[in-house]
Length: 331
Image 1 (cartoon, rainbow, N blue to C red):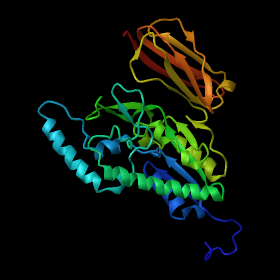
Image 2: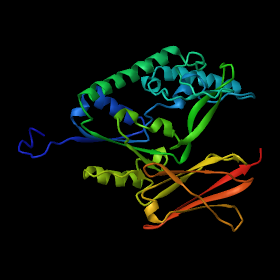
Image 3: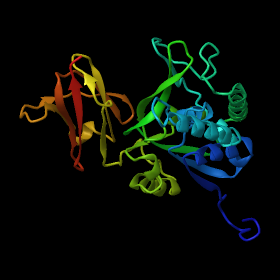
Image 4: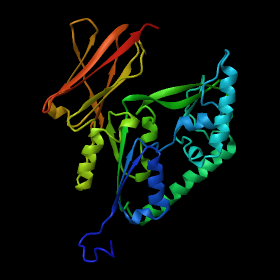
């Protein structure tokens, strides 16, 4: 720029747009490799800011769930090969989850992979220490820069809560085996808990209704980039500025016990929001009251009798609608 445009009036800076783990590379470049002096904006799409449970399963030799039967030996051998391969890939080690991503059967407390009382079986301690050192390098750089002043660049993170995503490992009661994985809301790959970019010191999240693989080509990114390139805020939610998205718990839910339904959308109260719930095949519709708990995010706690139920949300100006089903079973 200096050579070709010496008389320019602006200070050209780079907008980094990074998909999935590319967002980890982008933030590391900015905070640890002096890239922050050249960047105007960092946009991440479905980035596992807090790591992935899938990395822990892979490094623990449990990428393919084992079990009894003729395929058990093949799965065990393949898991060992995948584990040896992954241990030689720093990027996999560096993606170990740092939010509480471990559950122990019979225990209510959520645990981190660094919990010495219930270490993840098969997960090498060296890999955990290497991942911790990598994370501390990044955190230290962020803390050092924050003492100087706020970020010289803006951050916008597109994430999703509309698809079940691996959120936690489940260990047996004695902690000797990985027995299962738990799902939570996310983009199908990255759970919401991992997508949150807490390192920025602000709230850069833009919640969408797209899968991880579709974030880079969805209209949410197009609309966001048009605003970002023009120096405008891209909005508090990208269910689309005109969109509306319901998120229900994974089927089934238990009758007589409350379950939480979430609603995403921009300026919904001003758009004549109407929400209803009814038993599938029945004409009676029951209104639902959603309460705001974050910008453009709303929550309602519901109960229902056994059967198939429908939840619907509608808005005007412009018109939008989302409808989801949930199965309620007797316990």
